[in-house]
Length: 143
Image (tube, rainbow, N blue to C red; front, side, top):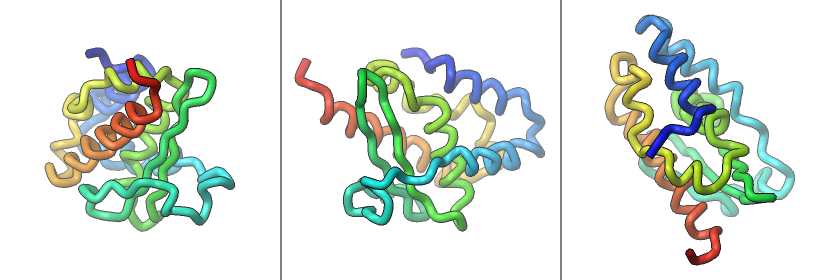
């Protein structure tokens, strides 16, 4: 399994960022979480909660024209979780379902975030990706 090039570019940016600045880079990704579209805004019940995250995070996926669109809702007071969502949104939105499904579950270990945030929080990133992949598998026709 290979990390998609868009996501790999983000991984490389983190790897090249000095350790004291990695947390700030993660927080910069909070701004990459787009507002929910009208059909999901105010309708968290239409999304799936990722219970493994320490703060409430909700995800939804769609496949349109053979491309994946990811939606996230996390409160502004949850910057680490929003940062994870921003990374996944930037790195995976617009890809084919197969590219997302082939993304290694532990891709984030190469980012060097373990030096600046707890393993518990990092497991949240794995849980988010796992939830996205499961949703995509459910939306794809049987192979």
